[in-house]
Amino acid sequence: MLFSMKCCLLICMFLPLVQLGIDTVPVLIGPVSYLLLSKPAKGVEKSFSLLSLLGSILPIYKEVVAELKAAGASWIQFDEPTLVKDLDAHELAAFSSAYAELESAVSGLNVLIETYFADIPAESYKTLTSLSGVTAYGFDLIRGAKTLDLIRSSFPSGKYLFAGVVDGRNIWADDLAASLSTLQSLEVVAGKDKLVVSTSCSLMHTAVDLVNETKLDDEIKSWLAFAAQKVVEVNALAKALAGQKDEAYFAANAAALASRKSSPRVTNEEVQKAAAALKGSDHRRATNVSARLDAQQKKLNLPILPTTTIGSFPQTVELRRVRREYKAKKISEEEYVSAIKEEISKVVKIQEELDIDVLVHGEPERNDMVEYFGEQLSGFAFTANGWVQSYGSRCVKPPIIYGDVSRPNPMTVFWSKTAQSMTSRPMKGMLTGPVTILNWSFVRNDQPRFETCYQIALAIKKEVEDLEAAGIQVIQIDEAALREGLPLRKSEHAFYLDWAVHSFRITNCGVQDTTQIHTHMCYSNFNDIIHSIIDMDADVITIENSRSDEKLLSVFREGVKYGAGIGPGVYDIHSPRIPTTEEIADRINKMLAVLDTNILWVNPDCGLKTRKYTEVKPALTNMVSATKLIRTQLASAK
Image (cartoon, rainbow, N blue to C red; front, side):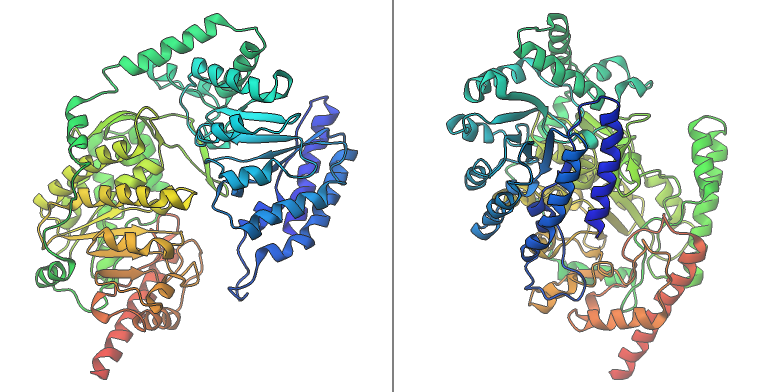
């Protein structure tokens, strides 16, 4: 039903464009990817095959195709991104049967199948180029550079090739000369009249238009291309391929690329050397986690089932106003600091009244968990209007990492020290981890991602050591996006996880045994990377659990041993619903069935910045009450 409704909306949007005389290609998620990217409904058996529904949804596709044809469509695009994943024979066969079934419905249309975000495996390529009724194939030639070899060795005669040579997922200006050379080689394979110049994927992943950026300096701006500029690049390449090369435009592009390569702003030799020295080494704390937890307990003296929150507290309208006015220089630094201190004091008092064991300062000084740190690190630039969709209606402005990364000055120490001075309870220092900063930024494309990540890790390492020297005994280094960066192909997982986990360990490998290192991960399925999470060697990990219907606990039921502290979230902070004490107590008991009492922490799923205090206070009250209830029951059982 939902799919059908969305297709009706597509047709409603397509018709006005046709009426305006605009030649438009309607885009649908392909039927097989639609199913492979779906999840079974709650309560459905794990053995249920999503592809068994293929016969049920194909009639809807036929209906939509018929309506688009009637509305005047001459092309239709099916996105089948799952073709770049590791598919078995049964899954590949589903593509063949689906498009054979659709062949009569798409007769008279040009049908484009688009793939993106990775190389397409040889077997998938063979399946794709053999599909019935398909006249064109699109490939990401930025993140799927090896696909070029498959195309050059066996591209079907008479078919269109949509060559994704302009990067649709990043904001760097294209190397037009290199792309033109690639296109000229593909022209020999596909034929001059069948080669189409394209972006590597949809442009929804990049910011809209550089024209809107008034704060970026001219040098950095010359290195960039947002969506509007990428369209110009595609057109320029297509014209050059047709013999109408804009020499001035190509020359300006070459000059911008040379400027970026030679700019002293990009390279910091000291940082390069420090990061290079990390590659051949392992970085771990000298003592194993069990011994560290014993040393930390002697110092922190926490009760069993210690309670904490993840970091942020509600970002009120007043708080946002203070930050906005300070940034606009409408209030002085003294006024700003005073207002933030007052907010921290309020957050500390609330937590003490609730009797939470390990406190946070609430992060009132922070706008975004990546942007806040990027603004204080060298090698980062920021846009004024470079918004991209994160999820649903939420948008973010990713930082741009254009050069070598270093930390000129402490970033969080003042606020953490201030908060710790307000309480005798442990106060967590709150940091964003290097992998999350990397994965939630537009990353430079002139060196491997892991090198940039190592640089960020060294910068965070300095901050960790300064927090420890300032007397902060608990430091949380969030890696919310660790799994998000996992490559689509399983063959590439090990390499990514190796350098990602190493980057995290770099940040805290030098602290004392008595300094407790926490990390936090949210809203992903972590079961398949649990061993890499263990290898991060954090003292305590807080991790999403309730929103995913407690799937995390299944790995422990299946025998995975975990000896560090762990806090599977006991309630979903993305919902305004306030969980009851009984409900949270039941969740804690489920956790105790598979986790040892001495390692279990109690906390929400994620930070509280999106919630209101009218929701936060009762939810945390119930969380603490449930914890105390279980503590009493455990004491009685002894």
